[in-house]
Image (cartoon, rainbow, N blue to C red):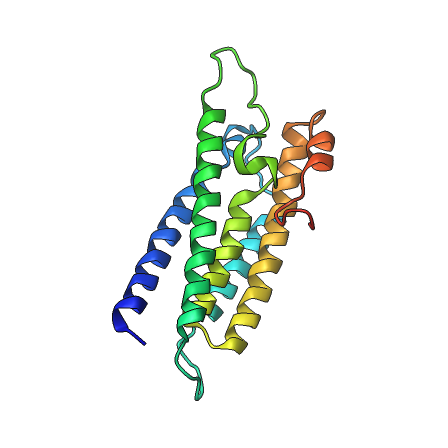
Length: 188
């Protein structure tokens, strides 16, 4: 396989990881505006599981694994670009939510862009990017193990974030919850 193609794939993945990290900290304006300083314990455990899953995905050990095929790397590019689009959409939606009127008491729920599909598009993007990275660099066993922990951690974090959303948007949250799925469109 062409060495230059692998470099392009890894550059795209690196760019997507940078955008995802920025989106992860920028796409939740309601969390910073919330008066309570306590976060549900689900978010802490979820973060640990996500970190463990990503560490497993990045494990360099692959016993007698054949090199990655071009089609696998093309799938990784496609998934990472889809992840990038979701991240950018979430960041744009969050930026619009920050432009609130002066007298606003609390933020409005996010319902534009990728927030129309899922309540937590950054988590959806994280799943896609972790899968893209696993396709590009990981041995198949590490890929499945790592993705298990990433999805379990994201589920815990999304549950914790939903508790915060329910506390902040008391009247509107049941409607938001019935209109959108948590982090996997049309499924969960």
